[in-house]
Length: 231
Image (cartoon, rainbow, N blue to C red):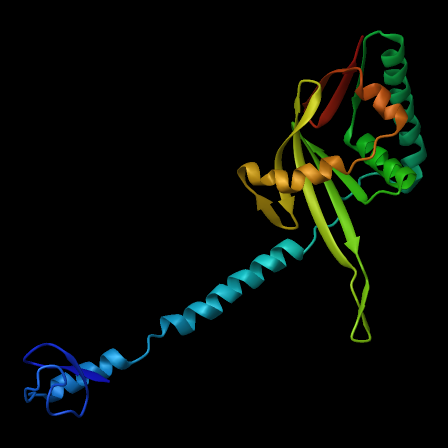
């Protein structure tokens, strides 16, 4: 603790009689001593701030690493072959139009996109994708699993991470307008950190690529998506 010299204002350790700076005899009162003690008390803010910062960091990590589940499906297992046949018929119609150079439009309902995502997961052995079609937006969810790992003689993992890409129709393509890492939404341009890898992770079959090459317009409206191809 230090007290202030009443002659020159220099700081001196408490208990000194003569100032180390000016050599004058200091007049120290009880009030000066209490003030010095109060100033010497450590602030509680550093002690409180550190746990608070760590709490925020841990909470953020939990939000990010706490994965979302695949979108729930309204499709019954017994109905999957019928819906898949309907989807195949529409895709074949689009492919024939793309290769033949004539106009064709096909509209897909949410359950048809669900079975399309399921088929792609099975055929391409890609990370698990699921889709949600609502209003004028299409959300593609990618779930990756890493591990397990052996550490200290124990098996750890697997670690599951979910990422979302929220898209809207923009002419003949889908444009990402949002993204989510686990339960954490990424605002503004930051969504590209998630939506970009999700969209690039989709593996297109040769049949799909033939349709994509001739896309003229994509429309998402009232929970359905319409695909139009043409010459």
